[in-house]
Each structure stands twice: as C-alpha cells, then as structure tokens.
Amino acid sequence: MPIPKYRRVLLKLSGEALAGEQKTGIDPDTVAAVCGELGAVLDMGVEMALVIGGGNIFRGLSASTKGMERSSADYMGMLATVLNALAVQDMLEKRGHPTRVLSAISMREVCEPFVRRRALRHLEKGRVVICAAGTGNPYFTTDTTAALRGMELKCAAIIKGTKVNGIYDKDPVLHADAVRFDRLSYDETLARHLGVMDATAIALVRDNNLPVIVCRMFGGDIRRAVVGENVGTIVHD
Image (cartoon, rainbow, N blue to C red; front, side):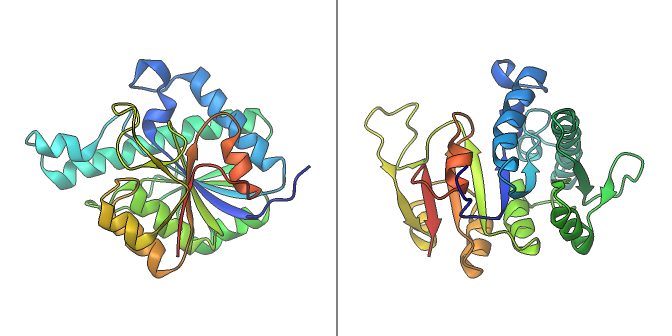
C-alpha cells in the first residue's frame, strides 16, 4: 500500500456532488459512491475532515438574489449542509468508518457542537470529522469554511473534489480548447479569477501556506492526491 504524503487532510465537496443525475436532493447511490472514494483514503490510515456544501438542497446566495434577506438565506443554506453531513455520516459508518458530525450551529440532538479541541481529538482517534453548518455566520461560503477548518484542525492539505480533473483557464465543459493548470500560486489564482474557491478562502490559505489540490471526485484521484501523485491542480506558494 502506498505511503500517504499528507497524513491529515480536509476534503471539500459540493452539495451537488451528492445529488447525482437528479441534480437536487440526496441520491443514496451517489452518496455510497462518494463514500467508497473516501474509504480508499481512510484505509491508508489518513486522518480526514470533511466540509460539504448544501447547494443540492438550498443555496443561500442564489435565494438572496431573488429577494430573500441574505442572512436568513445563508442560515437556511447552513442547515442544508447538516442534512448532507448526516447522509454521509450514515453511509461511512455502514462501511465501518467511525465519524462525528460537528456543527457550527448548536443542535445537540443530532450532532455535536464544533469545538476545535474536541475535533482534533476525534481525528487522533481515527474518526472522520464532518464539519457542518459552515462557520455559523452568514456571508461566508463553505469554501471559506474549508479553509478555516483546514487551518484549525492542522491539516496538511485541502483537497477539493470536483467533476473535472483540475483547474482550467475557462470552463472545459463549454470550451474544448480550455487549458488545465498543473500548478498555480495563490496570487495567480486570485488574479485570474478562476473561481476554484472564493477570494476569502484563497486569501486564508495563502496567508497560512496551506496547499489546495483540486481533482476529480471519482476515479481514485482523491487517493492519488493524498499519496502525492501528480493529479489535478495544486495551488500553493
């Protein structure tokens, strides 16, 4: 078995990743496939934290552009991430991987509150820590949450699983001549407005020199990224 380059990682997944072909809601078969990819990493002894978006259920920013008050919309989006976290928790534990869902919004009947020291202890015990409800504050995306939790939990890298195999200069789905980057600096990512993560998240990881690897969610690329193979795009200093 290959030796992991990164012993502790934070994996960022979009909420849409759990919807499958139906685009909205939670598709159990897709959740099972995602957890299969995660299991291949966990079986190597890697400590893992997860941040999952909520866009498959409710997207706060989109709702605010249609007249809903932004703070209310964002809180609704945070609650959507809790639903996704519980779905992933259920599937991971059915596969034999112990997990804990830690929420930035207190809801003790269904998950633990996010306490940094408690989260670190869970990681040390080999439990997957699923960080839900964003930062607990409106106006912050789950990308920013991933950057913040990645630093708080002393992760060696953030891995962002997407539908495409890295960062391109334009949308590869719409443009056949799109060019993929193997490596980018933080400043170049910001200057090019590539949209891989929002500017706040990129600024956070830049200031703390935390690498971000963008790769496909399926096909074993997450495992290959963890062992240090050249997959996707790495954003670093």
